[in-house]
Figure (tube, rainbow, N blue to C red):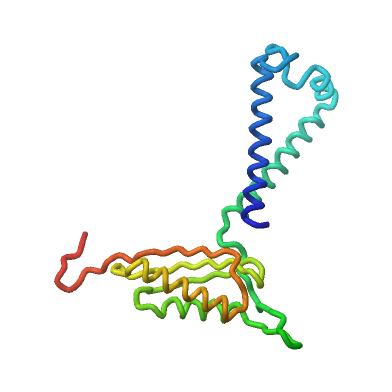
Length: 194
């Protein structure tokens, strides 16, 4: 599921929960037409059915709550996991002539990391590819030197990603770049901080 689809799903869930909460609040305050603030929220017929089905109604509610909690935990776990499952195996593209071009994703990742660290201002680089082979999501983290110029590193990363896209024959669907600046190391004549 794409990020936009996840945002839409969670927006719909949030709107439903807000609507349910507003309806329950309105009913308990007697603000809804035909509602009595002193009456039970579920209604007499539903309460009678609940009592007749006891103790199975309580068991059913507990099971429904546990299933809902487990589903929510799994959804939340998937949402918080970034980047998603990395691509493994081969990126395969049909050629203009009979045959296919196959590139190992590990080789592409290593090549992009080497290209990124080719700039002396970039100390380390980490690349993860996710998504589909034709339009992968590219996740990059670069560790820059303390005195690195951000605009020069940005241009270098942009050029490296363009070279990667040309080499791999794909267009990144999403590019996420995180840049971290390494702390300055004290020189021989500078005092160390405690």
